[in-house]
Length: 226
Image (tube, rainbow, N blue to C red):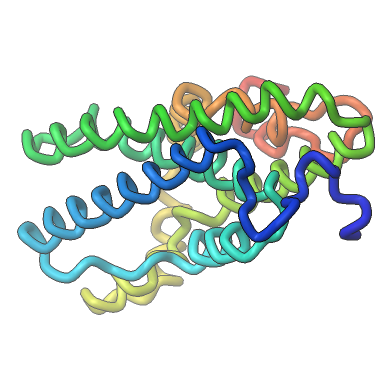
């Protein structure tokens, strides 16, 4: 499989990014992400106590991205998929929260995250059009698989087991109650939010593959795409 990885998407050395400007940007993003973690940890601690650990789905995804030798998995996975997911979450908190401190925190974090996603988009705009059809499919299939994994597993009750256990609720009971209360209208509203906040790259890669590629829209039973 390694031989089928697009040559333009494989690292040429231990340093994945060869362009000095890209290296500087990646280092700066590392600093900004550490600042985000520190800020949200301090906020959560001041409001509710110790932050909960990362959910299994997101943790596995981040681990795969970090350990992947392929550059495309790091940039598409982090800059476009994870950063896009974060933008959607922060935008929702920004719009819905009644806490002025959280609103301001999300506003500042989204400023950084927008630039992080833009870095990935610049890479994609310059790289993807130059790939062969086979190489393009490899990158696209992986992006679609990651997107669907995150979309259908990230916020389900199983991923919140730590939270439910802390208040004496069985996560399976919680899941059953959520499924009973969550209507099709709620699902449509949620997917509308996804369409609004997640990058266009996600939609192209995973949601609306109605032609010969093997990733049909899995939302057609609850959204307007079908």
